[in-house]
Every structure is written in structure tokens, then in C-alpha cells.
Image (cartoon, rainbow, N blue to C red; front, side, top):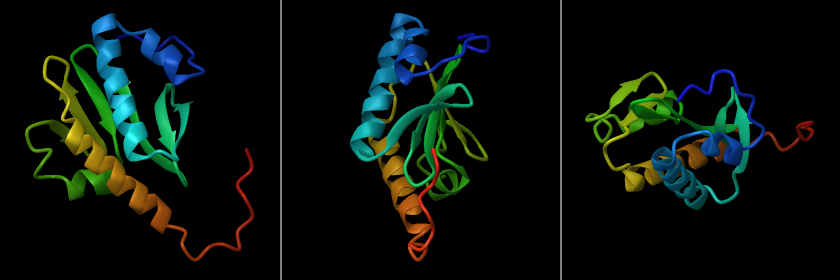
Amino acid sequence: MDTSKRQFKTIDEYVASSPKSVQIILQKLRQTIRKAAPGAEETISYQIPTFRLNGYLVFFAAFKNHIGFYPMPAAIRAFKKELSRYGTAKGTVRFPIGEPLPLSLISKIVKFRVKENLGKNKNRNDLPPKKK
């Protein structure tokens, strides 16, 4: 998907810019993330769908041959064995378009990220709220 020239304001806009078959995959991924992180905020960052909960949680993006899922490096390390059949990099997983998404694994990774993000500022209640 060549989304490089588009400026997306919402995840709905991003998903709608993909072919119908890919839209279905992206919506399943989005629903899985929402269920695993019900308090997360949906937004667009770096022109891709982003979920935030006490900071960046996960991102995803559609490409010609794969769906990119970006759960940060610690999650890739924690789930290295389960992710071994997919292409991975420092903070990236590449799920091939022609294969079913491993929704259960994605859910576990998102829940891991929720715990990680909620634990990072446990003793910092004295900080002022983040400006929007």
C-alpha cells in the first residue's frame, strides 16, 4: 500500500485507504488490540495507526506483502520464541498478508505492553498531567 503521500487523521481513514481484503485484516488487528488494551487511546502517529496508554503502546501498518506490527523491542525479546516464524527486527514483526494473523499471540503481546507501560511511572504521581 502506498500511503506515503497521504495525511491520515484517523485510523478509520488509514484502514479505508487499503484494499478491501487488507481492510478486513487491519480491522481484526485493531479489534484485537482494543480488546487487549481497552483503555488505550487510538491515534495516528508517524502516519500509521497508533495506540497509546501511558505512552506509546503499539503501532501497525499495511504494506504490499505484510502487515507491520510494532510493539517495541522489549516485547519482541519477550516473545522471541513465539514470533520465530515471522520476520522480526528490533521492535517490528512482519505478518505475511496471505497468512492468518496470530490474534491470540498479538493479544498477549499487547497485554504485555500494557503492563510494561503502566508499570513505568508507578512512583511518579507527583508529575503534572501531560499537555495535549
